[in-house]
Figure 1: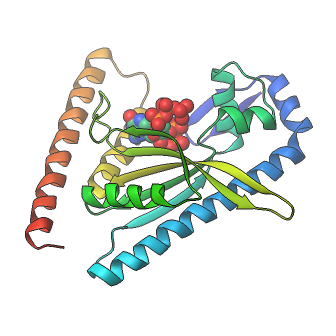
Figure 2: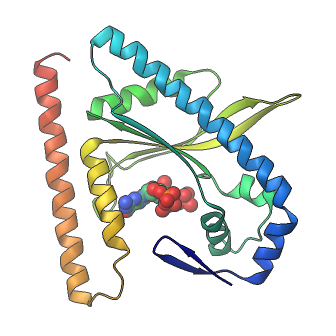
Figure 3: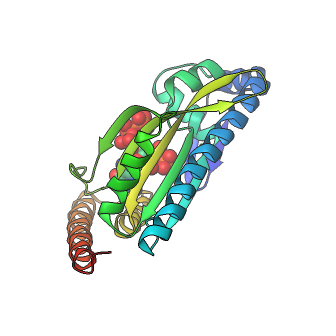
Length: 222
Ligand code: 0O2
């Protein structure tokens, strides 16, 4: 079966579809739990934003976005890992089913929010990847966290994994545009090389912009 998802086309094995159908109610329940985890993390960031804006008279969060991974992307990710589709595998092997993206004006805001989140006693850090200090080869920058947050169900407290991506407005601009360009397929090798070079250059320019803005902010003691 072929599933169209935006501009991507996946060939998904029939057995995956069968497994998906047989696990459907468990999956629906799990997705509802991920939605609850997203609400928990979103609220934590909104509270921090509120408190900081009272203290400093500016918002450390420009935009807050949440998303649940689509069933097609989850299936594709499991297939790449050579794992069968089951609620158990989704929960144990896929760490970014629930995702929160926090877009900040300044780099300092990113590390301040990260520290505040990780200091909360119900948050457990599972993994951190700092693509700001160590950008990806293509120029991608962001701070990635996988955290566990408890959700409180009727008779149970359940830890749920959430991926948090923190980035500046400039990093987000670069990542969003690069994401769109990446889907342009079948380009000649030379064009691809030139494009990668240009994208790396743009990432460097936007990074130096971030640092210059930071200097202005610090001068104003904001
Ligand atoms: P989507 O639609 O955003 O969810 P893992 O998730 O652990 O299996 P990995 O590669 O270790 O895989 O995760 P990592 O490096 O923490 O980054 C995964 C996510 O970061 C991606 O999710 C993107 O959102 C973002 N990302 C990472 N590298 C790039 C990049 O080069 N360009 C852009 N634009 N985004 C990037 P998904 O699942 O790809 O997509």
